[in-house]
Structures are given as structure tokens and as C-alpha cells.
Amino acid sequence: MALGRQATQPRGANRHPAADGPRRVVARAVASAPQPATSTSHAQSGPVQGPIIMNGQVLHSLTAERLDVVRSLEDGYLQTQVVPLLKAVDKCWQPADFLPPSEDADFLDKVHELRQRAKNLPDDYLVVFVGDMITEEALPTYMTMLNTLDGVRDETGASQTPWAKWTREWTAEENRHGDVMNKYMYLTGRVNLKSIEVTIQNLIGSGMDPKTENNPYLGFLYTSFQERATKVCWGAGGWGRAGVERPRCKRPHVRGPRTALAGCLARAC
Image (tube, rainbow, N blue to C red; front, side, top):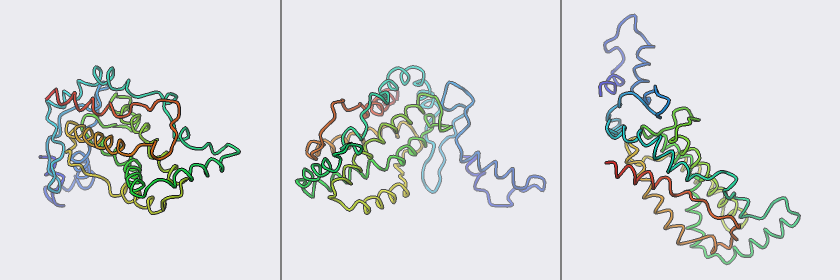
């Protein structure tokens, strides 16, 4: 709390002639930025910043004891039970597996066949499909949200900690979902794609605040329920109804890691 108050002191408060500018800037940076890592074995080290209130909202509510639990998961549970759930790229399906190959000489004929099948889709189904697609396309927002969580964020953008590795590779897997849906809807010709693209840009630009207080306990519990809701929604309208033929490869397991993390943190409470 002391740092939070120091950061919001008015100009001139406790001012010293020899300490203009730089020292005040450093104080603000310390108050708002996550603590730098001092250990190679953990995503974050050092003292817990402690709960602060900014614009009436609680931030950084993770206690020291629970931060220790989060850190203790890295080398054991996370490395052996969660990271292996991420599939190698060459074993994952790609959007092109579901769509007519654009390099084929009969590409236009295959697109025509796809459009003929898509004509049978009712409008209410298309509304749900587009809603799912917009949700998937907002992936940058979800990665940003995960990287607000204390103790698990990717501190460098290319950190090799299990937490950071999982976040990046999960995001890479998820990125395929919006890609295949967007390309499919474009080929069907059934929707006004530009209006959808405007919606997606507005959605990402607006951001998302799920009120998780930079707390991985709250963050992973939130995402587990959110992923469950996604599964229910997708179960109500699958690819088969859309007339898209599945490739022979199996769908990758992309839902498990977050649910596994939330369950482990809940048991540790």
C-alpha cells in the first residue's frame, strides 16, 4: 500500500531539489510493474506486492502463502502433468485440413460444393457459429489476461518457465480455431464478413476485465468455467452440421491444461 500511495502523490510533495524527475518516475514504475525475477527456477521471485486498490478495484490479491503454492507447481506438477498435454505442432490439425486446398486445380469446384452444402444451414445456426467465431478470434485478449496473473506471467515474452511455455503454446493451439472458422465463413458467402471483422477489432480493442485481481487462483477458476461454457456451446452446434468434413487426424486436447491447473490450485487451498 505504501508504494501505491507513493505513486499517486501530487507533484511537489516531499520534493527535494536534487531529486527531480528520475526518482519520482522510478517510484511510479515500482508501484505499477511486477517485481523482477531474481531466480531462474521461478517465474517470479521477491516479496509479494500485496493487495492494492486502483480505481476502486482490488489488484494483486495473491497472498505469500498461495504464491508459494503456485511456484511449487512449476518443476513438479506443471512440468510433468500439464506441459505434456500440449501437442507437438506436427501432430496438430491445421485449418487447411478442413478446407478445400487452394493450390488444387479444382479449388473453385470444391468451393462451389462447400457453398452448396452451406445453403442448407439455418440462419439461427449461423448466428451461433459467428458468435463462437468472434469469441475465438479475440484470442489476443485472453493471452493478455493470462499474463496479468501474478506468479505465472511470461516476464520476457519468450520465458522458458513452464507457466510461460504453457501460455504461449496453448495460445498457438487456440489460434487455429478462429482461423478455420473465419476462412470457412468467408468461403460460404452466407455472412457479411466485414461487419464481423469490425466487431472483432472492436472487441479486442476494448479488452476484458474479469475481475480476477491478478490472482492465478481466480484466473484459472474463471477460465475453467469459461472453457466449460465453450464446450457446451460447441456441443450444441458441431462441424458435422456445418457440412465440414473432418480430417482423419484426431482433434487435439486443448481444453485440459487450464482445467487441470484450476483443480490443482483448488486442492491446495
